[in-house]
Length: 66
Image 1: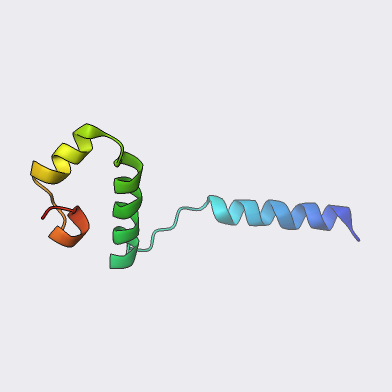
Image 2: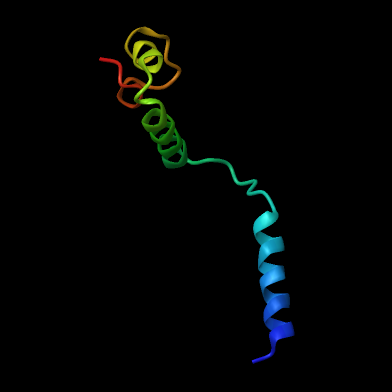
């Protein structure tokens, strides 16, 4: 096993993953991000008030209003 080659391959992969992904987000990407955001803030009473009475820029099913 060539250690120098293995290290070079790992460094190459690290450089590849440092490049930002410029693809546009799909609807499922946005829905997943919204779910993660909502789950992260679910314990906050302010977020629950906003979710219940606030103006939501998402559709009703994703927003939790209703």
